[in-house]
Image (cartoon, rainbow, N blue to C red; front, top):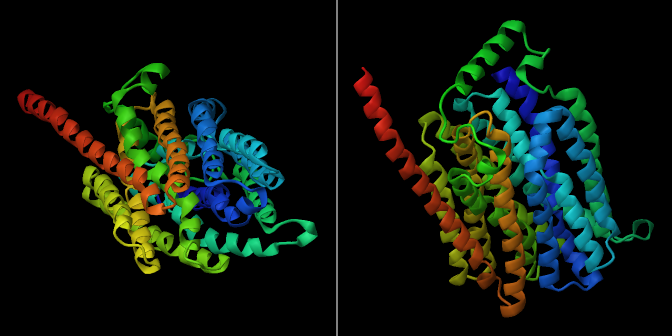
Length: 427
């Protein structure tokens, strides 16, 4: 398992790092772009959120195509197309072109994250998944930790060849995705059975272990694609993920502007913006490993969401720069710490036949909620002039996600009691 992890996880983490830099760099581009193109907060929020509309529509088809064509080729296709479109953001001239490219970018990137989660389930048995997913998703806070000062510095290229700094930022941060997409074809193998880099005995052991695990009954068994999309467990897990994913999307896009509002320079904003993500990157890996070691998922998923809800609500009471940074640190830690346990629950709930569509639907719906959070923050900020009030939709969503996770745990306990009684009776 160590050999498999070292081969697959670091490479995919780098790919996801680049993905998230390309997704959230819009927040830093806004420091120049909004003024250059004369975009209101509402227009900027709508354009930022439109990414998630096309992402939602293309997510399930993309994951089904991944199963058909193989993860290696499909992940490469996703990365190459999103890299070109991320760079194309440099061509934006006004609201219409902003909306159009954001829609295309969402369609291009759709399927990457759930595709990789599905791909990891091909390689890692259940007892490894929370920590492995934690290592993979650590790319999200790391992308903001490293990407914040990098993006801020790239704004300093202002004037090169007559282009504004924000246009250079999009071009220079889009190129690595294309190169990594080409590298996917050489680095990745579709499944363990195809892994020539594993010794035969290790390959056979892993295939047999995963096959045995696949035969176990799951809460979501064999269903049609339509049934999977509207399955109550899938919908409930979508709400839980929305509390992390959609809240994360809202914060990542607006957080630089929140910090910048205290009168800081672009570089100071970038450095302060990176602090919450540095802390979250460390804690989410530890929290995911703790969940695997204890075998407990429900509280490991719900407690971080509660932390996010309470900390963001505190912006109504505290408004100094120091208190804002502390609040953002706690909120971001909560957002990312629960990701590994939640995705581990999702892969454990879905059978082999339902995993592709189910994981894609969970991710699609949770990201669609990101459209709402990004737009609402901008709309409320325009209407009230206060970021503290604009963050209230994020508070409500994180709280609802925590409650939903606890209800899922309660339902699973109720389902397990009859199974335990049946086992005792059979003995």
